[in-house]
Amino acid sequence: MRVLIRLAGLCGMVLTPLMAGEFRLAPPAPSLDRWVYPFGDFGGDRPVAPTFASFDPRFDTRDAQALFGWDTASQLATNSGPDRYLIRRVRIGLTIQADQKFVYDPSFDPFQTFLTNHPAAVPDSDPGRPVELYGAGYRNGFSDETWTETSPFGAVYPITSTNIALGTRNVFAAMHGEDGRLMDVSNNVGQYNAAWTHAPFEVRPWALGLTTNAGVGELVPAGARFVFEVDLADPQVAGYFQAALDSGRLRVVVSSLSPAIQITPGGIGGGGNGDYPQWVTRENLLFDGPDAPSLEMEGTLVGDDDTDQDGHPDDWERFWFRDLSPTRDSDSDQDGATDAEERVAGTDPSRAASRLQILAVGFDAGAARLRFTIAPSRRYRVEASPVLGGWSLVSGETRYPEPGVAEFVGSPGGQASGSDARFFRVVVEE
Ligand SMILES: [Ca+2]
Ligand SMILES: [Ca+2]
Ligand SMILES: [Ca+2]
Ligand SMILES: [Ca+2]
Image (cartoon, rainbow, N blue to C red; front, side):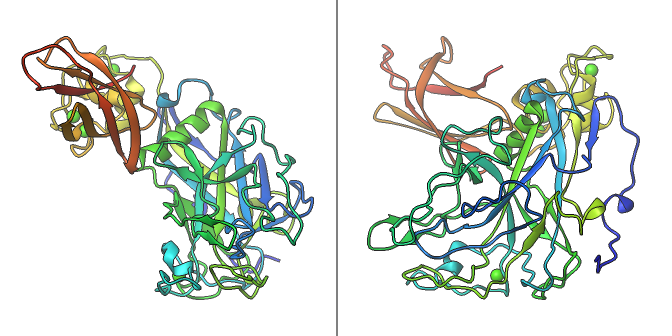
């Protein structure tokens, strides 16, 4: 059945010996996978998980999603604390089962390109639709701990209702919202009809699926292998995978907005011809072994050993520098933050562009507004002082307007002093 000969994967990698603390995870198969499609009782046994969109406003636009999960506890110790898992790479590999059903598009398509029946529509600049990878979010009391391959969906209403299956997924493709929490991206293209409106918003996929088995704009053959290299430059995404290793439950959701065949009365987008990606699951007997869904993950689990007694765990030093060259007071990248400070802050001590810093500050009518950089799996508090001393906590709200940046708004309160001046600082909580 295999129609392609592939020379990808581990054969092409030069494997260097692992140092203490380093890990290279490559579980033989997912622990679970699931076609996230709330119509019919498919359980977790389906050998193929198609991903497609519905532009009928009574359904989630990302109508059929595919979840893949790996339990990593048998490969790597859990419960060390998320910040101890320093991750260099997360790579997921998936195989297409159905032959020549969709066109390969390796680049992001903005949501406006799906609004075929709306004034804000813009044309798709390239043929096809990309395949996107996200984290997994949960609702209705489910979590990565309780949700399984056989967990139920929520209600599906009659075909005559104005809401047939909106927001009914108990697990869904998710990215971090402005509040820092995982949010459902199932309807980011927007939904319009007489009864209600969901405003569109743009998404930031954590990875796009890339393949060498089809040219850009060409039909994808059966057996094509897609690789999703996760963007770990986004601290919240990196933090998601740190938390996954800490819990031992790593889950990702694949989605694509190739339209389903159904006609879409009143829909924001057009109907399709039934052509969309169809992904091999772990239950697929025709595509197994190297064609099965795969996870590769590289990094370091930081232990306590500190053989050169400089305060830095050896594993942390080797992850960033391959040796123990940092010292107690060194600033290896000369960005003004010592290696010790960068270790606590979770920033990259080998790159000057990465450090904890306040990017902008405003103080107006008693309210302070600060923008500062964030790092994976870190919490922060803002403190204020009129005199650079006697710092006091400022309570307020933190939002995340763009990747890697937090914006805090709060009031430092009325401190009795002769001046309205305030100093602010951002403190990493240890
Ligand atoms: Ca396109
Ligand atoms: Ca050390
Ligand atoms: Ca530094
Ligand atoms: Ca740095």
